[in-house]
Image (cartoon, rainbow, N blue to C red; front, side, top):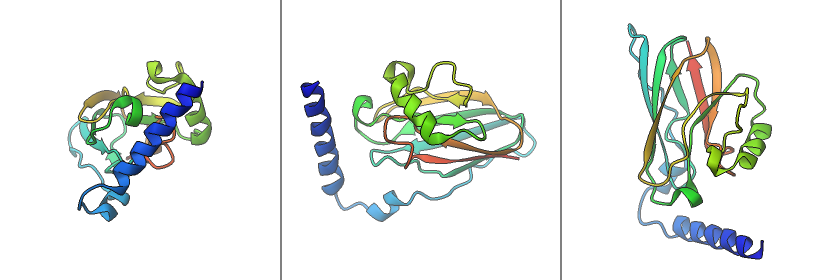
Length: 169
């Protein structure tokens, strides 16, 4: 247990160094992801979406839009460099009315072997596997009925910063 605590402290210290010493990039742009709506085909029953997550625990889009019943292909790309064990990301689409904090607690308990998604959860519409820096993954699902649905990264501690809304028209 003590060794695990030391490892966690070392990871957190490394993360603080990385964010404090990150080159001359525009940090303000990294801290405030744009609210983008992903384009969708008007006449198609298919929608192709993409979203990126980075080492600063941020998605690049806070809003995605599809039509009810469309077959959605979503690709998650991790644009960072950190390993999956330290800064893994996934994309989890939750049903309306899901208590996100309660779900996130259950996701931590589900563990990495389950991609931080509780097995058999009735709160999940779709999800990707957890990926690390430089990796990408894709999930295909049918868009639910019209409404707004929250999506999060359920990696421990990420959901409060890495979240957005899927608008289904």
